[in-house]
Length: 167
Image (cartoon, rainbow, N blue to C red):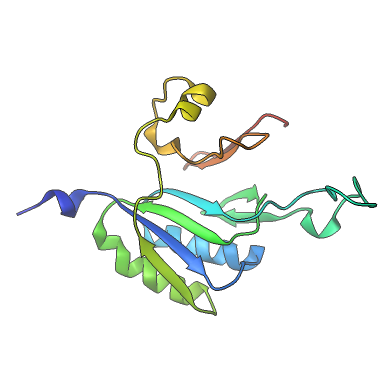
């Protein structure tokens, strides 16, 4: 007998012990995608500024935060944050053991996997102000309403779409 809990999606947060380098983040995200069952995913962490934001060097470019391209599921996109947490929604409970194994393969240090509710299920006032009526419920809660620019990378089998006001 199939119950509602068997078919309900599961939201999970992976918290590594330290921030991930772009290479480790790429390895982790590829392992997660190869496991399958991912409905949506969000990487979370502090912003990586392109220039020095304050002080005597204000406006000077930061070379180490340049060209942070990673390739996930055969599609490349640029990292704009230092990866500290990975939040994802799995289609069902059956993908959870594979997710834990993927994290163990990709991360050479300890991590925590928490279950909970990390994404919006209904549009908020901020979502309505940014998008209007939302048809695709998967984008709810993926953009910070306080951010100065919108940045959202949608991975599909066809191409990567990056929505950004400044580009």
